[in-house]
Image 1 (cartoon, helix red, strand yellow):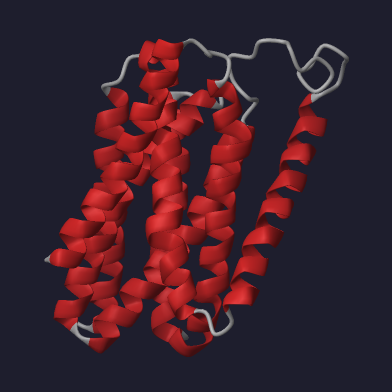
Image 2 (image 1 turned 180 degrees about the vertical axis):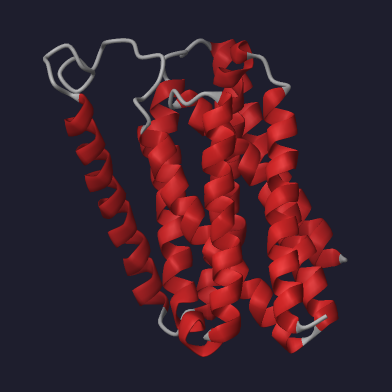
Length: 258
């Protein structure tokens, strides 16, 4: 097989397996579990950012200050994007923007949109990384692809739950996750044909992906947890957040230690 065939195959298989793994877990969950799974999703997002994405981006960055500036810019960018979504949905004075105390069953798709944008950046970069690994060595490419799949499954579970929380149906969540997964294939093919050019964009793209995940976790999801301030609910939330972080850490340890 040629390097390009390996890259395309690994990108497709990786996207299918991570999507299938996340979908299998998320589809088995009852609707009443979604609020609890949101806590896990927060942990998975923060774990992915601070244990995997940012360390990798800093390692690749020629100037760490430029990378942290990109993350800061990204957080502001996603704040503006969320405002645009709010303005689109807010046509009267009964919406949550005018009544912050009004209970909402979902967030009108804001978190879902943010996470889809960030996940697209992240998956594109994964494709570039897969391409670089296969061009270097086929065995390295296979190991790299397996590592990316292993890291993606817990994160995709969190993304899926966030889409459900944002008001999307299970079918819509699968479709949108599939579309963002296609960015891996795009990154792999572009990486193969223009690796030197695309590699220069890897660090800032990872920075934007990190910004989207930080923003969704901190600005959109964590405030919702404060609606249940009782001690038992708080302990449950903390435990699930730690579990989300731990799942990312554990997979990373298994992959890097292999």
